[in-house]
Image (tube, rainbow, N blue to C red; front, side):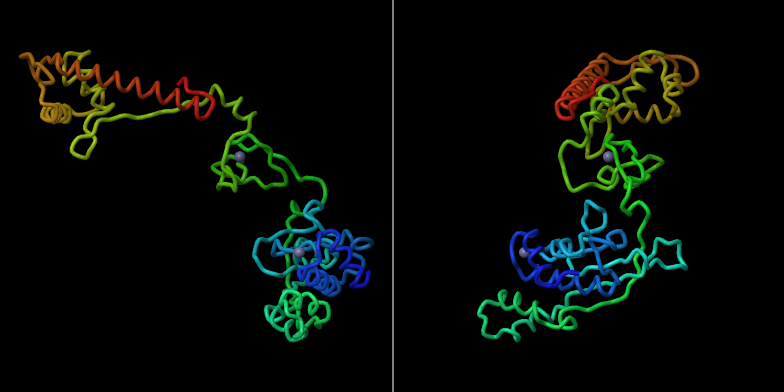
Length: 329
Ligand SMILES: [Zn+2]
Ligand SMILES: [Zn+2]
Protein backbone atom coordinates (compact mmCIF):
# COMPACT_ATOMS: atom_id res chain seq x y z
CA UNK A 1 0.00 0.00 0.00
CA UNK A 2 1.09 3.55 -0.69
CA UNK A 3 2.20 5.87 2.07
CA UNK A 4 -0.11 8.38 3.70
CA UNK A 5 1.17 11.39 1.76
CA UNK A 6 0.65 9.90 -1.69
CA UNK A 7 -2.76 8.53 -0.71
CA UNK A 8 -3.75 12.00 0.48
CA UNK A 9 -2.46 13.62 -2.73
CA UNK A 10 -4.46 11.22 -4.84
CA UNK A 11 -7.55 11.80 -2.72
CA UNK A 12 -7.22 15.58 -3.00
CA UNK A 13 -6.97 15.22 -6.77
CA UNK A 14 -10.20 13.18 -6.90
CA UNK A 15 -12.05 15.37 -4.40
CA UNK A 16 -10.90 18.71 -5.81
CA UNK A 17 -9.48 20.30 -2.68
CA UNK A 18 -7.51 19.61 0.47
CA UNK A 19 -9.68 19.58 3.56
CA UNK A 20 -9.84 18.05 7.02
CA UNK A 21 -12.30 15.52 5.60
CA UNK A 22 -9.67 14.23 3.15
CA UNK A 23 -7.11 13.76 5.90
CA UNK A 24 -9.62 12.04 8.16
CA UNK A 25 -11.01 9.89 5.34
CA UNK A 26 -7.58 8.71 4.22
CA UNK A 27 -6.53 7.80 7.76
CA UNK A 28 -9.86 6.12 8.45
CA UNK A 29 -9.41 4.02 5.30
CA UNK A 30 -5.84 3.01 6.13
CA UNK A 31 -6.99 1.82 9.54
CA UNK A 32 -10.11 0.10 8.26
CA UNK A 33 -8.30 -1.75 5.48
CA UNK A 34 -5.55 -2.91 7.82
CA UNK A 35 -8.02 -4.19 10.41
CA UNK A 36 -10.06 -5.92 7.72
CA UNK A 37 -6.95 -7.66 6.41
CA UNK A 38 -6.97 -5.94 3.02
CA UNK A 39 -3.46 -5.16 1.80
CA UNK A 40 -3.93 -4.28 -1.85
CA UNK A 41 -7.45 -2.85 -2.26
CA UNK A 42 -7.02 -1.75 -5.88
CA UNK A 43 -4.99 -4.78 -6.97
CA UNK A 44 -4.96 -8.31 -5.65
CA UNK A 45 -7.72 -7.63 -3.10
CA UNK A 46 -10.02 -5.59 -5.31
CA UNK A 47 -12.65 -8.33 -5.46
CA UNK A 48 -12.49 -9.05 -1.76
CA UNK A 49 -13.54 -5.66 -0.48
CA UNK A 50 -16.78 -3.82 0.12
CA UNK A 51 -17.18 -0.61 2.07
CA UNK A 52 -20.30 0.81 3.72
CA UNK A 53 -20.14 4.57 4.24
CA UNK A 54 -22.52 6.34 6.61
CA UNK A 55 -22.24 9.95 5.49
CA UNK A 56 -22.14 11.90 2.24
CA UNK A 57 -19.39 14.31 3.18
CA UNK A 58 -15.81 15.05 2.10
CA UNK A 59 -14.35 12.01 3.87
CA UNK A 60 -16.44 9.68 1.71
CA UNK A 61 -14.50 10.78 -1.37
CA UNK A 62 -11.26 9.99 0.46
CA UNK A 63 -12.57 6.52 1.29
CA UNK A 64 -13.44 5.99 -2.36
CA UNK A 65 -10.01 7.19 -3.42
CA UNK A 66 -8.04 4.98 -1.03
CA UNK A 67 -10.14 1.82 -1.34
CA UNK A 68 -11.04 2.06 -5.01
CA UNK A 69 -14.59 1.12 -4.00
CA UNK A 70 -17.42 3.02 -5.64
CA UNK A 71 -21.20 3.09 -5.96
CA UNK A 72 -20.96 2.27 -9.65
CA UNK A 73 -18.87 -0.82 -8.98
CA UNK A 74 -21.36 -1.77 -6.26
CA UNK A 75 -18.46 -2.14 -3.87
CA UNK A 76 -19.42 0.99 -1.93
CA UNK A 77 -22.78 1.16 -0.17
CA UNK A 78 -24.15 4.45 1.06
CA UNK A 79 -26.14 4.29 4.27
CA UNK A 80 -27.64 7.70 4.96
CA UNK A 81 -26.99 7.78 8.71
CA UNK A 82 -25.24 11.13 8.95
CA UNK A 83 -22.37 9.54 10.92
CA UNK A 84 -18.68 9.87 10.25
CA UNK A 85 -18.15 6.13 10.07
CA UNK A 86 -17.42 3.39 7.57
CA UNK A 87 -17.41 -0.40 7.66
CA UNK A 88 -14.83 -2.42 5.78
CA UNK A 89 -15.93 -5.86 4.68
CA UNK A 90 -13.38 -8.45 3.66
CA UNK A 91 -15.50 -10.78 1.51
CA UNK A 92 -13.09 -13.62 2.28
CA UNK A 93 -14.22 -13.48 5.89
CA UNK A 94 -17.62 -15.00 5.41
CA UNK A 95 -19.09 -16.59 8.48
CA UNK A 96 -19.27 -20.38 8.09
CA UNK A 97 -22.31 -20.83 10.33
CA UNK A 98 -24.48 -18.79 8.02
CA UNK A 99 -25.35 -19.04 4.34
CA UNK A 100 -22.20 -17.29 3.21
CA UNK A 101 -23.84 -13.87 2.78
CA UNK A 102 -22.78 -12.80 6.26
CA UNK A 103 -19.31 -11.46 6.90
CA UNK A 104 -17.08 -10.46 9.77
CA UNK A 105 -16.26 -6.80 9.23
CA UNK A 106 -14.67 -3.78 10.85
CA UNK A 107 -16.52 -0.55 11.58
CA UNK A 108 -14.45 2.57 12.08
CA UNK A 109 -16.07 5.58 13.72
CA UNK A 110 -14.44 9.01 13.91
CA UNK A 111 -14.43 10.02 17.56
CA UNK A 112 -16.28 13.20 18.38
CA UNK A 113 -13.55 14.15 20.91
CA UNK A 114 -10.94 14.25 18.15
CA UNK A 115 -12.50 17.48 16.89
CA UNK A 116 -11.73 19.18 20.19
CA UNK A 117 -8.41 17.42 20.83
CA UNK A 118 -7.14 18.71 17.52
CA UNK A 119 -6.95 22.24 18.86
CA UNK A 120 -4.54 21.13 21.61
CA UNK A 121 -2.12 19.80 18.98
CA UNK A 122 -1.83 23.13 17.25
CA UNK A 123 -2.73 25.81 19.81
CA UNK A 124 -0.79 28.43 17.80
CA UNK A 125 -3.00 27.93 14.73
CA UNK A 126 -5.76 30.53 14.83
CA UNK A 127 -8.20 28.90 12.48
CA UNK A 128 -9.90 25.96 14.17
CA UNK A 129 -10.48 24.21 10.89
CA UNK A 130 -6.84 24.60 9.86
CA UNK A 131 -5.75 23.17 13.21
CA UNK A 132 -8.03 20.18 12.69
CA UNK A 133 -6.59 19.50 9.26
CA UNK A 134 -3.01 19.52 10.53
CA UNK A 135 -3.82 17.60 13.72
CA UNK A 136 -5.62 14.82 11.88
CA UNK A 137 -2.37 14.13 10.04
CA UNK A 138 -0.39 13.42 13.21
CA UNK A 139 -2.87 12.33 15.90
CA UNK A 140 -2.59 8.66 16.93
CA UNK A 141 -5.30 6.40 15.53
CA UNK A 142 -6.81 5.64 18.93
CA UNK A 143 -7.49 9.34 19.48
CA UNK A 144 -9.09 9.72 16.09
CA UNK A 145 -11.09 6.56 15.76
CA UNK A 146 -13.01 3.87 17.51
CA UNK A 147 -12.88 0.41 15.92
CA UNK A 148 -15.46 -2.29 16.44
CA UNK A 149 -15.92 -5.77 15.06
CA UNK A 150 -19.29 -6.21 13.42
CA UNK A 151 -21.08 -8.64 11.17
CA UNK A 152 -22.64 -7.54 7.91
CA UNK A 153 -25.22 -9.34 5.79
CA UNK A 154 -25.01 -8.75 2.08
CA UNK A 155 -27.80 -9.99 -0.14
CA UNK A 156 -26.86 -11.60 -3.47
CA UNK A 157 -28.67 -8.82 -5.35
CA UNK A 158 -26.36 -6.26 -3.70
CA UNK A 159 -23.16 -7.92 -4.87
CA UNK A 160 -21.12 -6.74 -7.85
CA UNK A 161 -21.72 -8.62 -11.07
CA UNK A 162 -24.46 -8.93 -13.61
CA UNK A 163 -27.91 -7.52 -12.76
CA UNK A 164 -29.98 -10.21 -11.08
CA UNK A 165 -33.11 -9.45 -13.09
CA UNK A 166 -35.46 -6.83 -14.45
CA UNK A 167 -39.17 -6.42 -13.85
CA UNK A 168 -41.67 -3.86 -15.09
CA UNK A 169 -43.47 -1.79 -12.46
CA UNK A 170 -47.19 -2.50 -12.78
CA UNK A 171 -48.01 1.14 -12.09
CA UNK A 172 -45.52 3.40 -13.88
CA UNK A 173 -44.29 0.89 -16.46
CA UNK A 174 -40.63 1.65 -15.78
CA UNK A 175 -38.07 -1.14 -15.48
CA UNK A 176 -36.63 -2.06 -12.10
CA UNK A 177 -33.32 -3.94 -11.73
CA UNK A 178 -31.75 -6.06 -9.04
CA UNK A 179 -34.85 -7.07 -7.08
CA UNK A 180 -35.59 -3.50 -5.96
CA UNK A 181 -39.28 -3.99 -6.75
CA UNK A 182 -41.83 -4.50 -3.99
CA UNK A 183 -44.72 -6.96 -4.18
CA UNK A 184 -47.90 -5.13 -3.31
CA UNK A 185 -51.22 -6.92 -3.58
CA UNK A 186 -49.73 -9.48 -5.93
CA UNK A 187 -48.23 -6.84 -8.22
CA UNK A 188 -44.62 -5.77 -8.67
CA UNK A 189 -44.22 -2.08 -8.00
CA UNK A 190 -41.17 0.16 -8.07
CA UNK A 191 -40.36 1.81 -4.76
CA UNK A 192 -41.65 5.29 -5.65
CA UNK A 193 -44.96 3.83 -6.83
CA UNK A 194 -45.29 1.60 -3.77
CA UNK A 195 -44.16 3.98 -1.07
CA UNK A 196 -43.59 7.41 -2.58
CA UNK A 197 -40.35 8.66 -4.07
CA UNK A 198 -38.03 11.64 -3.73
CA UNK A 199 -39.46 13.38 -6.80
CA UNK A 200 -42.79 14.74 -7.83
CA UNK A 201 -43.68 15.30 -11.41
CA UNK A 202 -44.90 13.25 -14.32
CA UNK A 203 -45.65 10.08 -12.46
CA UNK A 204 -45.92 7.84 -15.49
CA UNK A 205 -43.35 7.19 -18.16
CA UNK A 206 -44.23 8.10 -21.76
CA UNK A 207 -44.52 4.42 -22.66
CA UNK A 208 -46.82 3.69 -19.78
CA UNK A 209 -48.98 6.70 -20.64
CA UNK A 210 -49.33 5.51 -24.21
CA UNK A 211 -50.33 2.08 -22.98
CA UNK A 212 -52.89 3.42 -20.55
CA UNK A 213 -54.23 6.05 -22.90
CA UNK A 214 -57.35 4.18 -23.84
CA UNK A 215 -57.86 2.46 -20.56
CA UNK A 216 -58.02 5.25 -18.01
CA UNK A 217 -60.93 7.44 -17.13
CA UNK A 218 -61.98 9.62 -14.26
CA UNK A 219 -65.10 9.04 -12.20
CA UNK A 220 -66.95 11.61 -10.18
CA UNK A 221 -69.89 11.21 -7.85
CA UNK A 222 -72.48 13.85 -7.19
CA UNK A 223 -75.15 14.31 -4.60
CA UNK A 224 -77.12 17.13 -3.07
CA UNK A 225 -76.71 17.89 0.58
CA UNK A 226 -79.24 19.42 2.89
CA UNK A 227 -78.93 20.21 6.57
CA UNK A 228 -75.32 19.04 6.54
CA UNK A 229 -76.04 15.58 5.14
CA UNK A 230 -76.57 13.92 1.77
CA UNK A 231 -80.20 13.87 0.79
CA UNK A 232 -80.45 13.44 -2.96
CA UNK A 233 -78.15 11.36 -5.10
CA UNK A 234 -77.91 8.42 -7.43
CA UNK A 235 -80.01 6.09 -5.24
CA UNK A 236 -82.97 8.47 -5.20
CA UNK A 237 -82.63 9.08 -8.94
CA UNK A 238 -82.87 5.35 -9.59
CA UNK A 239 -85.95 5.03 -7.35
CA UNK A 240 -87.78 7.95 -8.95
CA UNK A 241 -87.01 6.81 -12.47
CA UNK A 242 -88.21 3.32 -11.60
CA UNK A 243 -91.48 4.76 -10.31
CA UNK A 244 -91.82 6.70 -13.56
CA UNK A 245 -91.23 3.55 -15.58
CA UNK A 246 -93.40 1.13 -13.60
CA UNK A 247 -96.15 3.53 -12.47
CA UNK A 248 -95.92 1.74 -9.12
CA UNK A 249 -94.01 2.39 -5.92
CA UNK A 250 -93.91 -1.25 -4.86
CA UNK A 251 -92.52 -2.44 -8.18
CA UNK A 252 -89.98 0.39 -8.19
CA UNK A 253 -88.90 -0.50 -4.64
CA UNK A 254 -88.42 -4.11 -5.70
CA UNK A 255 -86.30 -3.03 -8.66
CA UNK A 256 -83.91 -0.94 -6.58
CA UNK A 257 -83.83 -3.53 -3.81
CA UNK A 258 -85.40 -1.62 -0.95
CA UNK A 259 -88.57 -2.27 1.03
CA UNK A 260 -91.86 -0.57 0.18
CA UNK A 261 -91.77 1.15 3.58
CA UNK A 262 -88.28 2.49 2.94
CA UNK A 263 -89.33 3.78 -0.49
CA UNK A 264 -92.25 5.62 1.07
CA UNK A 265 -90.10 7.19 3.77
CA UNK A 266 -87.65 8.38 1.08
CA UNK A 267 -90.50 9.95 -0.84
CA UNK A 268 -91.90 11.64 2.26
CA UNK A 269 -88.51 13.06 3.27
CA UNK A 270 -87.88 14.37 -0.24
CA UNK A 271 -91.30 15.97 -0.37
CA UNK A 272 -90.64 17.74 2.94
CA UNK A 273 -87.19 18.96 1.99
CA UNK A 274 -88.06 20.00 -1.55
CA UNK A 275 -91.47 21.38 -0.68
CA UNK A 276 -93.08 19.77 -3.72
CA UNK A 277 -95.27 16.72 -4.20
CA UNK A 278 -93.39 13.78 -5.75
CA UNK A 279 -96.03 11.29 -6.67
CA UNK A 280 -99.67 11.26 -7.62
CA UNK A 281 -101.29 8.16 -6.31
CA UNK A 282 -104.14 6.41 -7.98
CA UNK A 283 -106.55 4.26 -6.04
CA UNK A 284 -105.68 0.63 -6.36
CA UNK A 285 -105.27 -2.65 -4.63
CA UNK A 286 -102.77 -3.74 -2.06
CA UNK A 287 -99.43 -1.88 -1.74
CA UNK A 288 -100.82 1.48 -2.68
CA UNK A 289 -101.87 0.88 -6.24
CA UNK A 290 -100.46 2.99 -9.09
CA UNK A 291 -98.30 6.07 -8.77
CA UNK A 292 -96.94 8.55 -11.25
CA UNK A 293 -94.28 11.26 -10.88
CA UNK A 294 -95.51 14.84 -10.60
CA UNK A 295 -94.40 17.42 -13.21
CA UNK A 296 -92.47 19.21 -10.41
CA UNK A 297 -90.26 16.22 -9.61
CA UNK A 298 -89.77 15.42 -13.30
CA UNK A 299 -88.43 18.93 -13.73
CA UNK A 300 -86.20 18.53 -10.66
CA UNK A 301 -84.87 15.19 -11.98
CA UNK A 302 -84.12 16.65 -15.39
CA UNK A 303 -82.17 19.52 -13.85
CA UNK A 304 -80.25 17.11 -11.60
CA UNK A 305 -79.31 14.91 -14.55
CA UNK A 306 -78.20 17.98 -16.47
CA UNK A 307 -75.82 19.12 -13.74
CA UNK A 308 -74.53 15.58 -13.31
CA UNK A 309 -73.75 15.33 -17.01
CA UNK A 310 -72.02 18.71 -17.04
CA UNK A 311 -69.87 17.83 -14.05
CA UNK A 312 -68.93 14.53 -15.70
CA UNK A 313 -68.02 16.14 -19.01
CA UNK A 314 -66.05 18.82 -17.26
CA UNK A 315 -64.21 16.22 -15.16
CA UNK A 316 -63.35 14.24 -18.32
CA UNK A 317 -62.02 17.32 -20.03
CA UNK A 318 -59.93 18.40 -17.05
CA UNK A 319 -58.65 14.82 -16.67
CA UNK A 320 -57.42 14.82 -20.26
CA UNK A 321 -55.83 18.23 -19.75
CA UNK A 322 -54.10 17.41 -16.48
CA UNK A 323 -53.17 13.76 -17.01
CA UNK A 324 -52.94 13.81 -20.76
CA UNK A 325 -54.95 10.71 -21.45
CA UNK A 326 -58.24 8.89 -21.19
CA UNK A 327 -61.38 10.57 -20.08
CA UNK A 328 -63.88 8.97 -22.40
CA UNK A 329 -65.46 6.67 -19.87
ZN1 LIG B 1 -13.65 18.54 1.16
ZN1 LIG C 1 -43.45 2.52 -10.63
